[in-house]
Length: 308
Image: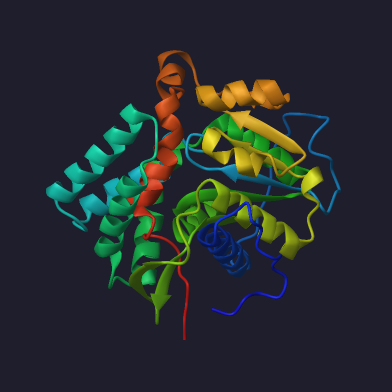
C-alpha cells in the first residue's frame, strides 16, 4: 500500500497498526465523501460553532453518542436475521459482549477472538452485498435510535458551514450509510481489505478504536487543511480521550463515569441526553468498552480497501 503524500510521519505515541488504521480510515472517508454531501438544521449553542470558519470541523463518535447503543449490534441483528451466522455464533458474540460489560475492560485476546470470528463470517462476501444490506438494516433497526440532542449539535455545525464527520469502530461502509442518512459530511470507520469487491478476511491495520481514532482525525485534518484547535469532538467513552484531546472544543456526551470525571477535571463541556434508569444503565464504566467490543465482533463488516 503506497503511503499518501499528505500523511504526517508516524508518532512514537501511536502503534504502527493504529497509525495504519487511522490513515486507511481517512483515505476511505475522503473517497466516500464525493458520494454524499448534504446539510440543514438548528444550532444549540450560539457561541460555538463559529459560522464561516473554513478550517473548523466537528468529529462525532457514533455508539451512545449519536446513536443509542452500538451500531454494530444493530447491524449484527440484521445479519443474523439474514442467516449470515447461526445461533452458536450469536451466543458467542453475546457472551463476548457480556464479558466486556461485566469486566469493564478490553482483554486483547478476547478482542482478537471476536475480530477473527467476524472476519471469518464476511470473508468471500461482496462489498456491494453488505452495503445494500446495510441500507436495509439502517431502516429496520437504526433510524429510530438517533439521539435528537446530539443530532441537533451536529446540525449546528452544519448550519455554521462546517464539515461534520462520524468517527467510529463500525465498518466505514456502515458508518458512511449513517452519515449520509443524517446529512453529515462523511465517516471515518474501520477498514477491511477487499480485492475485486470481495472481502479477503483481513483488516487494514486494526479496528478504529482509541488511539486509532485520533490518528484518523489527525490524518483527515491534514488532508482537509483543518486547524484542530478550532475543531470540536464529541464522545461518550473514556476510550476516546485521545481524540477529544486533539481538538480545541471537546465535549463529553452521555459520558461513562470515567469520561465524566476526566471531563470535569479538564473543564470540558458535558451533555447528557439520557434520562432516569436508562442513563444509569448506559453510563456504567463497563459501557465504555461497548463500542470496542462490537467493533471487534463485527469490525470486518466494514469498509472496502481495494488492492489491484
